[in-house]
Length: 168
Image (cartoon, rainbow, N blue to C red; front, side, top):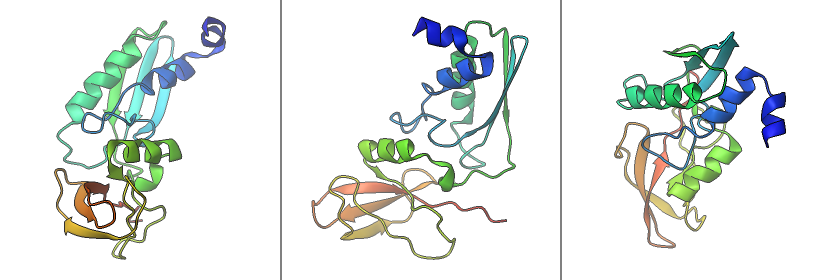
């Protein structure tokens, strides 16, 4: 592993470290798998990380910023870290990686559908048993990005991440 790390440039090392930074509300998924990291610039030990908030008013942004800075600062060769939250391009649920969708299911959250057209209904499968025999209990879940559902097959309540599409 040490030889692999030595062959990586600083940007690659920072990206590897960011793989360990998880969403404060969903500890099974990294900010990389959520698609929140737009860019990493690394020059002479100075690192600038451009991150996309999943929602503009997300109350966890200060925690995410702190965790990004901590992870990047621990990379050998990094002298300073700056985190910029950017709003263009807009974050969409299509940025979630396949690994991220697996991690959401492990946490008990149904991932959003790919390429969803805003305003159209979406199909939600239970993250526990995979059944599509589910009902929406409340479109307003514990956070702005999730809804509460109930699986009629396995009898489990669960959350589903709401699809967010690019409005452009």
